[in-house]
Length: 436
Ligand code: NAD
Picture 1 (cartoon, rainbow, N blue to C red):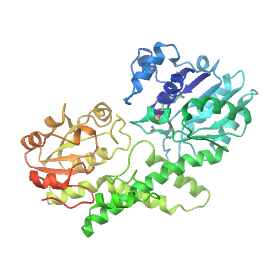
Picture 2 (picture 1 turned 90 degrees about the vertical axis):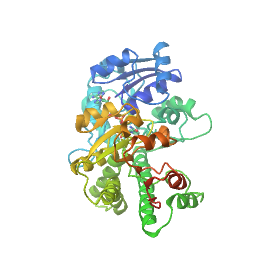
Picture 3 (picture 1 turned 60 degrees about the vertical axis):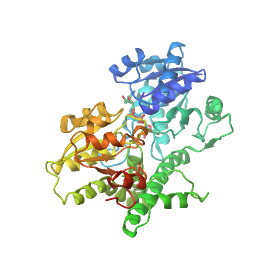
Picture 4 (picture 1 turned 45 degrees about the vertical axis):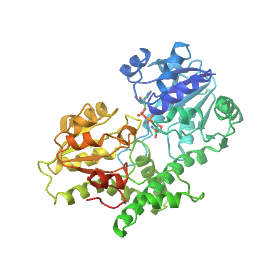
């Protein structure tokens, strides 16, 4: 099939590349010329494990190309994916201007039947708005489909190539058939393509993200309580997760969820509910708890240093909102940096992939180290904010030699308590006993 993908961010680039991988001809469009030029030169604009192999292969074999020219991209496309940003607008609701703006641009130039697919996460009713844009701007027949994306950054290729399910919200038979054909190679192991109406499909995405955010927030609250009552959240997590009704995944407590999706999607769903005079109480609590959880580790640090952080120097391991990505949107590390710097502390950070993005946002507000151990040099303590694999089994001797004091605040529970006792560290983690 001939496919156009509008927007080449984390979702668009993965979608375009993975659709090319099964033999489709894909043209990806972006408005950022520099980005498009980079991709034409074979350079990936984001870090996503495993994507580079598919990216290079499909470019080399002529199935994947890039342009800034929308008309050229859609001319022969049967299906057009909108993988555009839907950030929170000024009122916190999802800003639909990118999606509706692109729909209008397409409507003004479209010449024959197309399936227009919204891949972006959009509030219920957006498909109707997109249809309206086409009705107002063209006489050409199009079908509008909602096809939310469930990929996780860091394992996006695997998630796209072998999805748990594909959700397609479409009312037209023609569009359903085309979408079914397009996705068939990705569900060969028997996972379903679930067809439904557009509104249910749009709601499915928000419900999934909000449920996951709630699950993790619930565990964060259990962890906070574990600290007070003297229980170990790691044990509780295993005990609870062994119940098949609950499941083992997404139960790891930490310093709050971040990223480009959960914070904005939970907020957007809560605000959408308000539009219908529905008070979505759980989601309001989830947002509230998560906000506090992001800086809870700073409270612990302040408590340890008796509220005086002026002149203190911290090493910070991890800047990305989660491992295996360079995405720093709503990353807890940024909130921690903000609070510590406000309190007069100095920070030297290390992250394997996210430093350039952080530097673009906060510049030289902190120092950046080339490797994890350099970051520790002369620091009063280490703070761990992202669970990159390389932090899981560090050289503790080197850690001890470089740090000024053997003090670790771990927001991701990377180390066994007994190990930290044996090594003689002060070790303060989440929902577990403090090792002094
Ligand atoms: P992103 O910000 O990484 O990428 C968006 C891209 O669109 C950018 O490259 C931008 O330059 C481009 N763009 C903006 N306006 C354009 C236009 N008019 N024409 C062409 N290109 C344009 O965003 P993302 O993380 O890929 O997310 C896209 C959507 O997918 C959002 O709605 C998001 O909520 C949803 N989503 C994201 C993830 C994720 O993990 N990132 C997962 C599932 C769903």
